[in-house]
Length: 633
Image 1: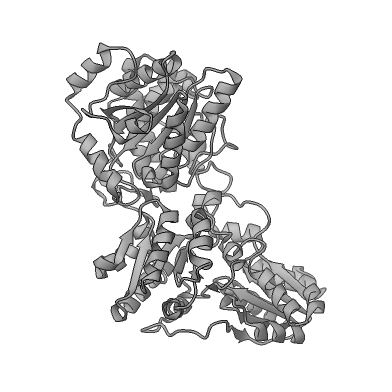
Image 2 (image 1 turned 180 degrees about the horizontal axis):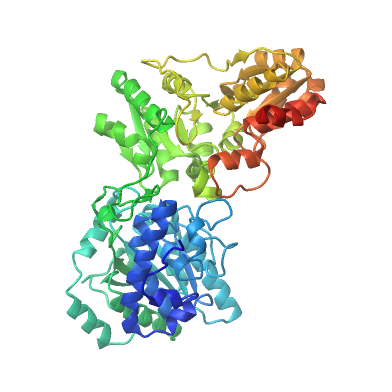
């Protein structure tokens, strides 16, 4: 049955572009917003995704597209978790039923996807800087279009947001920043700014007073702060706070801001809109995370359809292992950058509340904060997703690596992450950390190995270290009661064979073993080894594999320049340069991999068991069709 079949006609059914919305009277906007909210719940219930943030901006989004002449006027969404209503109103309503799936729309804004997405974003705190760039280009060319950045209060904890505010405020360029304040990031916000915003929230007057002030005078929308705010001091005209769920009020505020920016006195404006994450859907409003990210769910009850786990997640094993280490060592502390639940540090914080720190969406600050702790003899673990650790690279180099400080990086979501797609893939950490002198790099093949590597990291006290591990469930490996530190730089042979060896780094070892098992059915016996460490690499193991096999495949769920580069360097250093030509790197292809299931992404990359087995047969000159015959049999 077609979604929506049999229901009464809706205004939303006639909106295929914002121009259709703008033909409606203001009195119709509340109905449109209600229909957008219902549509969004229906869509996300069927595909999963980010729900709470989008529900919180339905009225704001409807007002934005009614007031501004998009796509000529530019709407730039920070992070863009909250962009689903925007996508519904910009011609992607039907396509969103395949959102975050292979070939469907992305879960974030994407320039490749629509002219209504002028800037792609899935990491935090970028919108103000991008908007200033758009405004500068507009002014240089003498155009008159509006530029609007929509930024959440959580994103305002990121340092780049302040860099953008500082530069934009000094420039004086007409620019509108909407502070979407729902007092919530992925987790409850932290930091002094959240206290400042709470004080401003408390100053919002009753609706009648707000509307009277809006109607009373020219210039930017009114401020009810009663005093200059932080934003005024940075060169913005602070306006509000206003009710972000009153679509009529928001339309009036935005019209006033638009007209002011077009006038001779126009300059940067910050509109403070108060919203509720998960608004209008009771299960989301009641949940601790406001249904930030959800699996498919029953729209009537909010019950999510999650399959029972077959094994504990890598994240939970990391958290429990770190708690065990901290139980024995009072110097162990843990730091997250606004992701306590995603990294498992909510569990650590419950066990050791005085040794768990949330730095906010501020990875640069978090890493240097860890460096300071390490200088004072503490043993910090920085638990940060691979994709977000990229944001702190200078601090890793300058503040940690050069000073050889024993900061321990727990790099979650390493490798392919599935539906979150290209902006969240953990592809680059092996390469960008592997080039830094003195780093110890580890990757577990399974959850039992992860326990040992957490213990290993805790014991390393003379240099920085990192352990990378993937999203999702482990392999079901039996877990030891307690991790045991591993010998640094030593791998292991898992399976002995002839002619060809696979040297795996990390969780793709299971695919290497599966490929070996399938090949054995064809009479081909290969060696499978687990490197455990990319740096320092096990030179003896590399030499052994190179000397005893015709071909060595290196296997990693990372970008070019990572583990395979360390293997090749090892061979050259050991005077085995002739063996380099017998190395076949298996890494992620030199392109960005879009959203799909993790299994589909690995198949695209040629890193699953089928691809590895086919590659071995091709190297031996054996017909790859042999594998297909086995499968058919």
